[in-house]
Length: 278
Image 1 (spheres, rainbow, N blue to C red):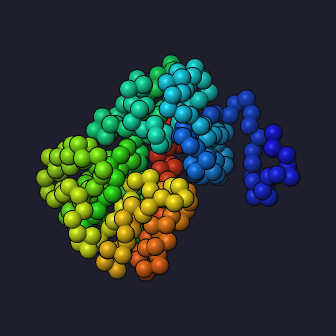
Image 2: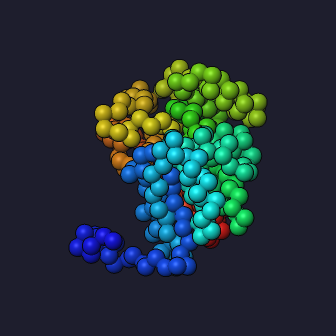
């Protein structure tokens, strides 16, 4: 137990006791220290008087299958979210997945059914778009550049396409993955001009970082905001640090920025509803 003297005044004032009836939820990641969901979801539960706790679970890749089997046995576990590097690897370990997961090949939201079955969905894309709406950023008719086509990037790409941009340009280091994604989105959304790569940054109204660049000190910028127009919007999905080097650079150039926390804020109610806690 953490001594009272080591708790911040805010936490000491707002924490609620964990009881035998408390429902368990959490996030699995490797590493996990940067994950913001325990704080954000904990506050969300407290504001609504929900007897649940959101925990950080540090799960290394070699322990993922064991964690999944353990989750099946925890009767008071409502479910959990998944972040790097497990979003793709967890999919074949689940009992059932949504069409969104089948399309993206990744899952970030897992519900434990009463019989122990694990059902997966992915909320990255719909949460991302909800965060943009809250920030006053419209997608329809705009030219959007998305850097990164991993688990989160793929979900975001599909969600962006559903918002009917004029152009969706996607870049990723994995050429084969990028080819599949752009071809699939182009076939599903013939009214959206889907392009492979970022040929001209000055064409973008909105530029999105969906790569891990910025998560660790010393990471390179995922792209140079100075190559964009001054009226472009730069969007980040990394939540910690809250101001990444990309956002700092774009802000210094006078651009509108949307921090990664907005994507999580857009997912909180989605998480709780999917897990049966809203």
